[in-house]
Length: 179
Image (cartoon, rainbow, N blue to C red; front, top):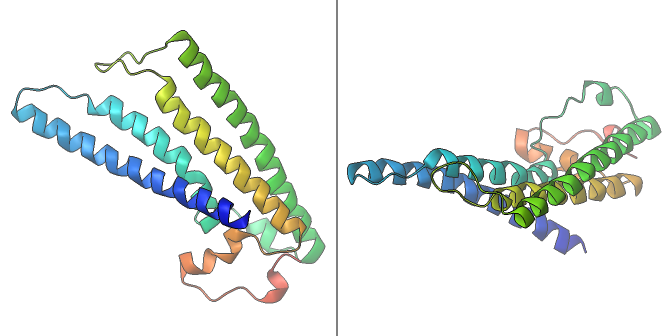
């Protein structure tokens, strides 16, 4: 199960990177298209790719320790108090993001069912970019539940475990880790 989840987060990160690349590609295509008199709406496509990239990258960023976390309060706690705060944060986050994931999935399904299309030059079906949002928020919900379980088992959360690689710092002392 651990390998499956880690691969899921990695694939999600790769997809986020792909959509970032697609933003640049659509802008380059628009520039080239201008030379040949072809109109390419890179604004609309880039917006769709930005939404997909943003949401698909959330779980990967959480697991990698690159999310912005305000941990001034959490740093001052040790032991069971710190564990309780971390559990609350991951649990509340999973509930909130899970609620968003369910509703964004229903929203994408309704757009598919009603045949909603974007108002731009391309008139793309709205369910396509909304699917990236729904899938990304669902994977983030899974990642938050994964972190909740890790903390409940007494393991160090991935976002703290990997922060050293992100910041290039020394690992935190053992007494600061969740126990």
